[in-house]
Image (spheres, rainbow, N blue to C red):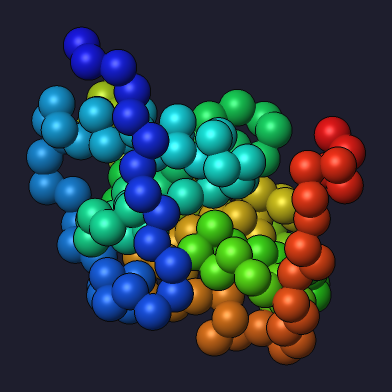
Length: 163
Ligand SMILES: [Zn+2]
């Protein structure tokens, strides 16, 4: 196996981000490779989620890690939404802005895992927001389309970053 490679993250304005992504029909080596590269790219960018269109691949594939371990979602569908909450969001494809978006506070999601098995996920709070944000990417929707407020991000220099 070759080394993992970091993928280029597209920013708003790129047409791929506005396309409705196609369902995955076959889980092959190429797809497993994509999952792996997407996870590496997400971690390297300090993100909590990444959708395939963000790396120029118009397929229904998402990786998420909100600090509870890596989730790989193939052909995910939200089957239930409950509650609503306004929360702050950012996006690796919209590097200069953050905004407040109203989302369901609980979602249930069905997806296929890397072995081809259909799985079920119950997501609360940050994970629920992340699932909705990333699945929107698969339909060509960005959080800036839904944001109640948008504010320019503070520019930080390395000295300002506190881990
Ligand atoms: Zn995003």
